[in-house]
Amino acid sequence: MQPLNSFNNMATSKPFVSPSFSYETLEETLDIKPKGEEMCIGIPKETSFNENRIALTPEAVGVIIANGHTVNIETNAGVGANYSDKDYSEAGAKIIYDKKEIFNCSTIVKSAPVSEADCELLKPNTYIISPIHLAVMKKNILEKMMEKRITALSFENLKDASGHNPIVRSMSEIAGSAVMLVAGQYLSNANNGKGVLVGGISGIPPTKVIIIGAGIVGEYAARTALAMGASVKIFDNSIYRLKRLQNNIGGRLWTSVIEPKILGKQLKTCDVAIGALSGAAGRTPVVVSEEMVSNMRPGSVIVDVSIDHGGCFETSMVTTHEKPVFRKYDVIHYCVPNIPSGFARTASQAISNVLTALLLETADDGGIDNVIWYKINIRSGIYLFKGSLTNIHLSERFDLKYTDLNLLIASRR
Image (cartoon, rainbow, N blue to C red; front, side):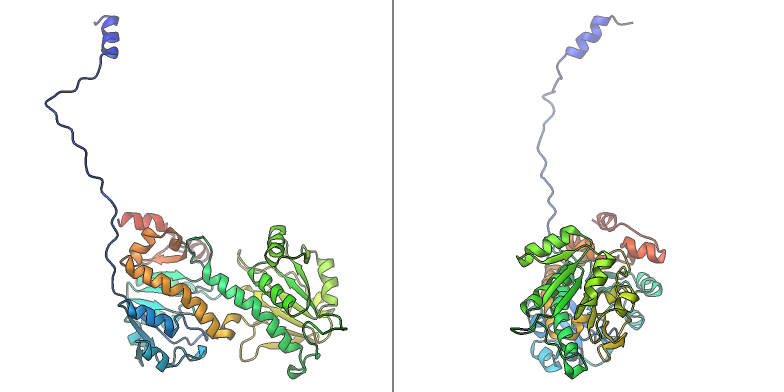
């Protein structure tokens, strides 16, 4: 047995470095971006969801082609937004007359959600950019896309470098600005309205507008209404959103939390009521009862922008761009989903501005697999990656297996 002082000597002894060893620093291995790839982009003609928009304008197509990529577009795909085949062919796109041929492209860009008909035509391992529209998404569509190992990115969840949703914001701005134009149209005699001018004139009390919801739609509806000279009152249960709206507009506005008695009293005397609540948690809450609507003035107008997520008026029913209104209790209801599609050219330009930069960035980084590795913000928009479902909300709703996207892409590096 060794004495205790020998252990102390070992503990205090200095480390010994043999001169027979040579020590060298190793080179640091850097993650170098791969070279860009040439993309083949297909744009099919939309035939569902009252869709008039197109995801890429001729100007955007010209920029993409000038960067060395190929764009195939189905004939008459841009007609809804007043873009002709000639506009696209002059920009360098190839006009395709067979829809099946469009889906041979490695990247598909759509302005409407993927339909069952689209699923049949999709080729395995395709990259597709489109909206989801949770309200109309079906389990069998997701399952077919998963079987074909599709990588899919949604408009609704795509974020930019600042963490905002650029396409959703643009569409909300269009919808908010449009609702007052729509309301003014149906208040006029030309559409059997009560003949009231939104805003009024000198010596006549201004038109009274109630806006339910202080998000982007509510803010732009308020801006437009105020610019037209209307009297605006805004309801929202979020004090933060009400404060933000007032700061953005730059003036003190009439605001209130959504309290049924106060809301019902204001609706009785209003000319226009706009539903602009968001349905972030699923269906939009119904905050205006049928009784409240029945007490509104005859000939007043309801524009329910929230109809995309079920509507916030109890009397709301989905209408179309072809037959946009119906009357109940002699109140005109405008409940068209996808209002931006009614202003298709402006909406197409807004979508195109975002997607052009995204597509060029994807090509420069060597494909979607690489761009989501280098750009963390784009990961939020991916709901399918190589056939794996990476959106937790879709997974819970349809009881399908969820896989974390970060783990998927890390395992492939």
